[in-house]
Length: 601
Image 1 (cartoon, rainbow, N blue to C red):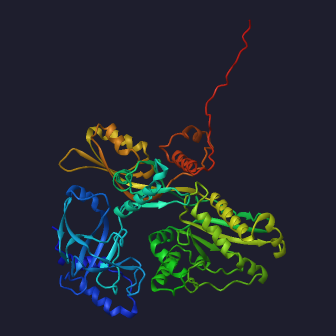
Image 2: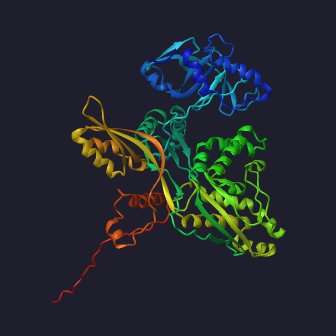
Image 3: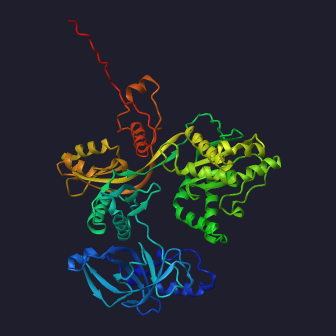
């Protein structure tokens, strides 16, 4: 039995209210206001509601006989305090709103309609008191996916409840008729607003990409795009699944590898670079706090003072360094990547050189005392290259060397920088080799890639939690389908009181396409499956692994993609082909020379 809104409101508010301290100027007013929100009072002076998603009113209008020529969106919302009425002017507070009157992240909207949602029908309302779930009209131009609605701007926006299934499956779309490109762009904008779980992007190459949570979700999104939003014929590319590149643990007993050496094109500067696996706690902390990292980076770039949230974030990262035994490396942190906030770290191990962190506040890094100083001129010249070194690191982490997918969980150490040329020599070589900053960026990027390839390189793939239900006589056939798709069986159990078996497995997302149809075909419709994104896992095998012994040659089959070794190479080559990168493959495996004999007369 579900609790009433009055009973459930205090617990809901503890999860929805921000945990950070409010602005000092209006702290007392905001805290008193937030206490009243927990009472679910319909007569409260402050009206508060939260829009969790926008949905298209055209589907409802088609059922109700309405006009579907124009697209209208209705906000799906819960009223937490006060009473919302038609005609009210409400403040739309976006996630970055800071509880001040002149915030640029808040807009004013007029409530044009209120609806009680009864299945596929909408019943018009004049007002919606606290505790009600309702549809709100008039927010189409103000809310993209979610927002907080309040009668005053002196209010903090509520936290957004993250979706369990994140978008992971991508397809590129284009119109059959190139003249209909504007209709497709407009349709993608409407689809992005109508579905809270979908993402639409324009790639740097100009491709229009739709990102969905799974195969079935993608089919539904494309159907809506064709029939409801764009209303044009579109061409869809094969599904594109994202991978990541990382380094695995070094086998026990392996000698440490020497740093990779890379020189600038003019041969006047050499970089010694080493790549290692980032400890798990540090990597997990950076992944979990990715959004907070983006916010802190944006504040620092804008020149704002260090906020308590940023200080807490950096302190938490330092604690992870200490927990993993990397306390000595904390003072070496130089930059994060990709895009300055990703789960990869650039560290400075140049003797005698004290780096300036890219955006992390220097006072929070608590840098150790610098060792004995190098030659001051060389030191200053390295300092002048800091921006280029960081840029080269960013370029490497955003597109790794295996198949130009983003890196994750990699620590890059700049071991040394040897400058053998004078400033005059570097200036005279720019006409031949290009600007000095570009040469440094290129050298650091290539050096980071070379250091990565010398380590235990691995691909990271997305994983589904797969639940298959089938009868006992079809259990073997269901197992055969899962095994062909590299599924890892976790558990098998029987539903109590029935003869239905439930199989829980971990299934790679890249192997999930066509699974539903394959299961139905092999089991004559007796099996059904349910897929939920479970996260990421590292492939066990090196994509470049080659058999070396006779036993390995007998067991290994490069065309067998049901084992980890064949699959890692297969998917790396697929991604490289899609991106136009060179691929090493045998075009002819078995051939016989044609024998042409002269015909004697």
